Image (cartoon, rainbow, N blue to C red; front, side):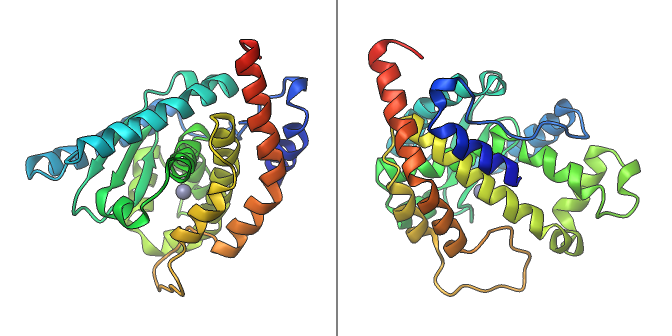
Length: 260
Ligand SMILES: [Zn+2]
């Protein structure tokens, strides 16, 4: 994915050249419909379970705020990547569900109320949090992850998506083998989210404050971790700050001129 970073940085100052900023890899193994229907079922099962015992969407003001910010990011994504226009974004919150923030294939976002309340994000910080989650969807990271996992799972090249995804969800050994991919996708979601957020008008300096809040101080776990270190994420954000500022300024000029 190094090429993606290079491409983003190179074209950030040259967006006048008309290059899209949100380009991601697209040559994946499985049909998007298979990935979407698996995610749809898993997402609906979670929503149904939370709805059944009163843990779903309990804070209307928070939900409205999340949906407003998502809508502004969606406009920016639609302008940058044709794939985005076909995504039907859904945003829900849950209470006492152990969720932080997650994005499932097809634009299905879920955020934990306690996580957000602890984070106490400004709109700019929350904008970048959502932009990061949306970037996972826009880059089809679920499909990409399963595509790569075929080489790390037994008989992976001959298995269908549902079968492989079930093993990915349940097998710790496979998750450990795939940690490198998770880390790479997190950094890509930061990069793409950074430009998406900047284009939507969020203050690019907010991403460093957000990452500072997200870092669980001194955390260590024996479980598989897909997240790169906060240092790595902060270093990447710092290296992209000027480019993100230029993207934001360009978007503002386009806005005043009535379009790109
Ligand atoms: Zn992520």
